Image 1 (tube, rainbow, N blue to C red):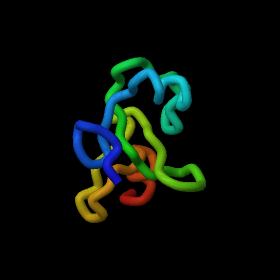
Image 2: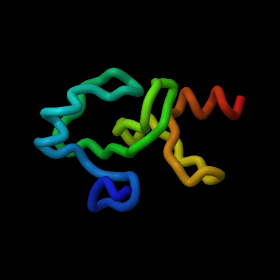
Image 3: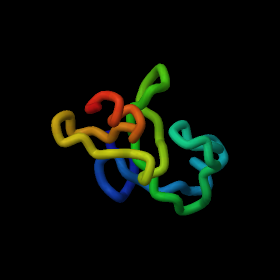
Length: 76
């Protein structure tokens, strides 16, 4: 699934996403226009969500982004 122009699973917050997403599922901080985000899985239930790029780690084994805390718990 292509999310944006920055490549597979990466995009930036545009006005439409800003109006629908409001806050990051990983850190709870509000999104700002132009924030870089990635489609990542995490500790929440359900499908992957868009979170701030800095709150995610790219897992080479699964070729997906994972929330930092979830990744640390899985690898720890």
